[in-house]
Amino acid sequence: MASAAKSLIQTLRRYIKKPWEYTGPASHPEYLHAVPKATEYRIFCPATVPEKAIVPNSLPETVYDIKYYSRDQRRNRPPIKRTVLKKADVEKMMKEKTFEPIDFPRPYLTATIVEDMDAIGGGYQK
Image 1 (spheres, rainbow, N blue to C red):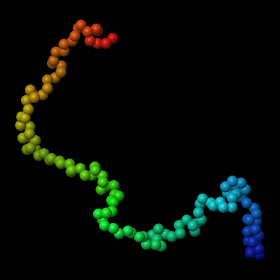
Image 2 (cartoon, one colour):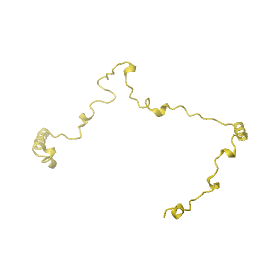
Image 3 (cartoon, one colour):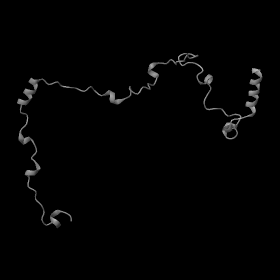
């Protein structure tokens, strides 16, 4: 009885289609569903690869290094030098007088500005 019902359902499935299978790309006999079946999705576990990888052997000098960090110029900078000052060093530097006020440029505000009064508008554009 169960086998007869099963064969009847199989026969009906062949002739009765789902509404979206009458027209469109799903109606074509070569149409494949985008989602694979569970048995087709992952045939073998990633940890148990059926074939062993073939690693080419060559001289290390002739192989181009594709690693980015070995070609990165920012990593080739010399190390940053840091100086740790102790209190005695700071006091010694404060006592040393290495420059005079004459060494600094004179401020702009102390100089006299001479304007050409013969210019139109006193040198300013209107």
